[in-house]
Amino acid sequence: MVKCECPSCYYEFELDEGTIVGEIVTCSDCGVDLEVTKIENEVATVEVAEKTEEDWGE
Image (cartoon, rainbow, N blue to C red):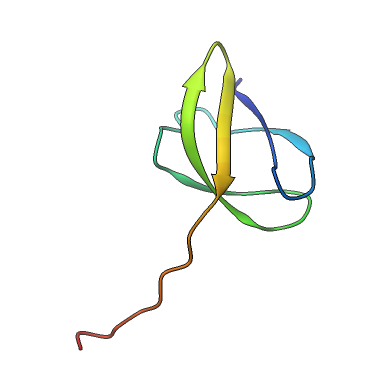
């Protein structure tokens, strides 16, 4: 299993099997959305995901 640490609350948790770079995951402790930026040696690097607003086709 791939582990990562939330940069917001420093909680360490495991990612689901098959998680890939670029995927958005949610910290199971604080609930912040995180983007997986790198996976190496069963350790993932994540950063707080940028929030994009819906433009509803405008």
